[in-house]
Image 1 (cartoon, rainbow, N blue to C red):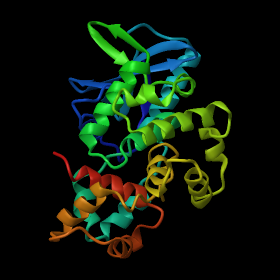
Image 2 (cartoon, rainbow, N blue to C red; image 1 turned 135 degrees about the vertical axis):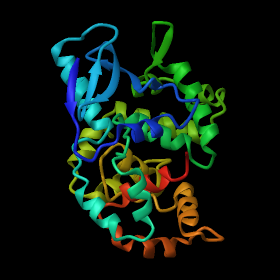
Image 3 (tube, rainbow, N blue to C red; image 1 turned 30 degrees about the vertical axis):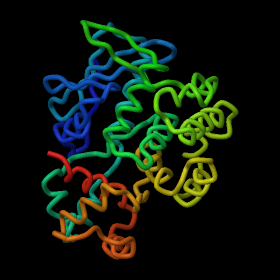
Image 4 (cartoon, one colour; image 1 turned 60 degrees about the horizontal axis):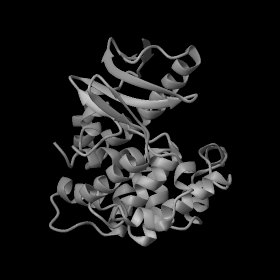
Length: 294
């Protein structure tokens, strides 16, 4: 077992609420206060069993302890996944003086942006979610994972890995259309996979870029990656706290409900409301998303 100390403001229960928001989720499982996550580390399948105790995440390895290097890589993944290196003091101070955010952040304080550390998964999941409801997006992802992902069965439960970009780079558009992807989405997903295979696109290179705008511009040059998709990926994968998916439907609904509006806010109204969020837009959005589900 390894132990990962958490920041002072960390609420594991709230993180589990987010992770458990869909019954179609198959990339992790939640049971009795534990979250189970399958990783592939140095070609080894490693099952994580994560719980919280004494201000630390406890990470067990039910299928047997991997190598020390693999354990270190697993710990690094968990820190990334739960955004544990982030100091949220500035966000909480900002939210304390924001009429809309204050009650939401106070209620869910300690929630962290649950990330998607794998760039291919973040990009393709965002593409799948374009222009459809969340339920059908999960249906598409489930079909995609079960068709092309790797899995392991342990103690009667099956755990899945997201498909790799090199695997998807080999398939054709019609293969994804068979899973009810539109032709465009199939082209975008395969295009992203091939860009990663040829080295045009990588998380490491994006993280080396100087600022938010440079990353955003680079991503939106890719076919199928619009402004919302770029901001979502920057928020969930690249730890850009200034990422602001301002056109997001969930954000609009959350703002309408929080402010008791009869209609969704316009983009200009949202920009005005968010004027004080500078540098923390991603966390403001994430907390507002949290207000939408029980």
